[in-house]
Length: 192
Image 1: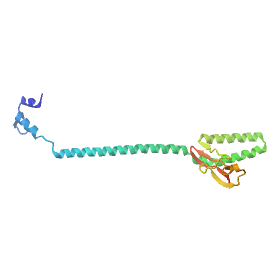
Image 2: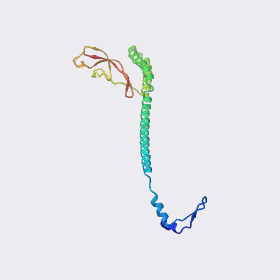
Image 3: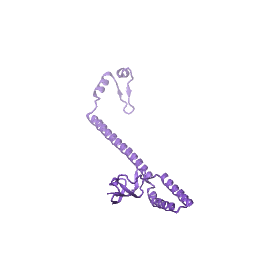
Image 4: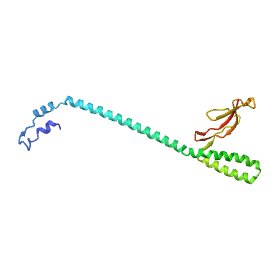
């Protein structure tokens, strides 16, 4: 059923305010449909609104991406902070661990087995506690090639053998790392 047939058989309509009768015939229906045109202003308004919507959508997507990057960055920083949060405490415990190492060397000279065993137990307990918190010893020994990224050279001495030139002759102080970060470089003597 089309609009013309719908209005053809309909009764005459009146408005309550004016009491005028309007006769909707085929002629008036055709006139009104021909007069209805979309003004040029509305198209430009529609285009403008479409452009504004696209701009706001782009702004939203950029803001959302920036927020996702922020979340990822803060999560990474939080993990890094967690890994190195106890760095200061562990670093301050390193001289105590060094003292234990030196004490063990001297106690072994005393030949008292009970004393040696007791100090070794305490030393192992301290060492295991620090290792459980993420502390690792930097593996470096005599005869290794000197690498300034992993060790600090205190001094150079004439190499005892030709084989030790440019290599580590002695390790003065052990180095330690926490995760991948070295918190104390090993102090070494190199041969020249």
